[in-house]
Image (tube, rainbow, N blue to C red; front, top):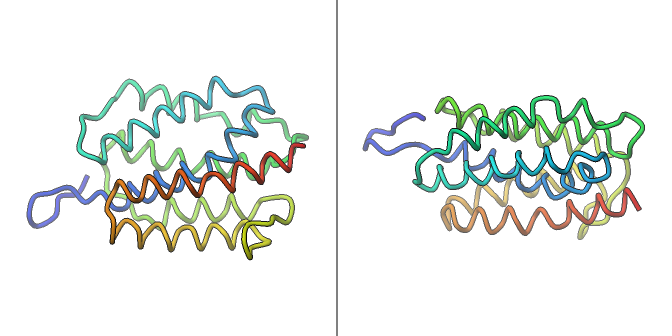
Length: 180
């Protein structure tokens, strides 16, 4: 990762990408179960957990990241095209790719790269949603991203992770309604 002038690592981009992957993971988890891919998705989630710990200052878990990378590599193509939310699922797995690759190689990330993947996935949602005043998942995701950036700036990493988990709940509910 890139070092700042004071010698600390700049983790904002990686944290925002990981938070987006956690957020979309609310829906991806439900869809993975429908597609019989829960075991593979469990490894992706473990890798994201490793990234959260790494960004928070712990040692990087290369084994968890490698397992997540391998599990996520073809996850999108294994989800049946005829299953609900197939385009979302394929696009949603790409955000995890960005987060995992950046963590494995310690390359600086432009948050726009990962966040644009999250917007692409949300735009692929196959139906209207009802989340507060939002009827399109892409609009909800855009609002989530703005709130995540603000929360990271004002509350730090713990506040960002708490927000990402909370924002994953409406995603999960939308997926549960989609597959019902």
